[in-house]
Length: 621
View 1 (cartoon, rainbow, N blue to C red):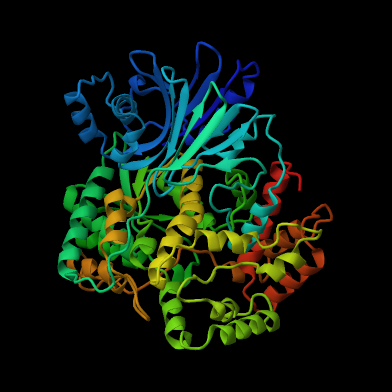
View 2: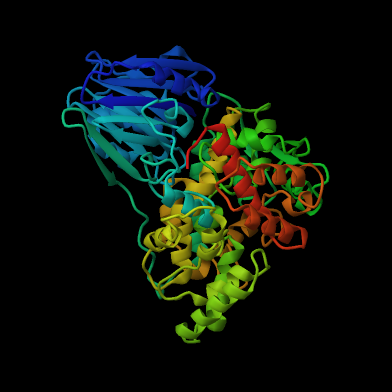
């Protein structure tokens, strides 16, 4: 895993200092090596920070130039099928001087051009400068595991793995994008190609772009999409699908265990990580597994579940004890995340990464299982809602939803589900994880705000078509919540500790199998989730394993806000006189509601992280 930064322009670039400053703002992404390269005409510059994982020698140094001097690459990520690609490329006449996947990617582009993307199995973000065509080619992996931000103005393209690197460029104005702020307050993250900064974009997952130096123009396109769902009534053999999943996931685990540094498994004791552990143990005789526990975690402690799985497979298991979470971590995380995100589980995810990094450089986890195989609790609740109220006329349901929204206070348990009654179950997906609805956002923001409603527009625009509510919801979560929350959280917290986390569930073959071959009835229905994965678990895991247990990775934020340093810190940050973005009277109401037993902890967490981020980077409204 690494960090990259770069610039390309239709004219000679005179001011170059920001490139190194931006690159080194991401030292955590690559503490092992650093590189800088400029084209002979001074119009393209690439910077790179390296975390050495495959080929630890200097032969894998980046930016990497091919033998002809015509192609130069800066690459972040891993190409898991690089060994197979290398064999194919050698048959086509390619030769190699290193054992790195970076050189394989460079050769793949030389021989197959931009079509090389269809052959890549991995997580990646990269930039390749092609002097022959006078173009810069950039791409990002299908699920969005690796990030890439960019800014285009006056024929000059700047880009980087993290927004903090781009903010070292004085050309980029530090001003909040109004629509992105509305989306953050509504969804907890900034979706799609937006970023929290005006005129700065993200390259979306499964997209590529080409910058032409001669014209200063940028072309962007999607190079991959989820396959269509199987026909609802198509005959399916559950046992055959289970066997196919075992093969695909087993191959993914074997590929992702390859590294020239120590590799471990993040074994939480849950269904997904336990299956990954089982398949890793089948692929290797020596497997290291790690579980992390926190003092006083109570029912959130999964240590015993993980220990049983580890003993069953005979892994070299370690239980790591973390320090209690302190509020002092929040400014550090606000700085690392670049743009605010509302997910308090970033705290334990950071602490886990910090502990694991002391023992290995690469770790495999279970991310993606919920989105691919129907694991979230809101899926079966959503289906139950459709089952119970779908026959009620939509107009009546929308009246009830509007009344509930108006009468029930923010943080009232079940309020979002009452609002979900207004969903058209044939075309829409309810925004269950809404932090501030449209009315609340208009009150929360302390000044006139022209972008109220951007959340609802973005949610509707990203909702896929189809009559199957579960399939729509899972596809929406794959492209939004997974890409913009879960994978961002994992990338930023692990990279802050120079740890590479891999996700076998997000192997391209597993993704296409889950969405293109497995019908919804083998994923979830009212009261049951992860049906196919549970079937696989019964085959691979000990008989005593509880495959139906669902334990979120979280912190007891509500109890921490009852008193003590967390409560004091939240009030200090939000009610500081210099905080002028949010309405102080409404914040007082949210804080009081939390004290009265309402569920406002996550809402308050998101607002605190936003304000800490705004202060850290001196952002203007």
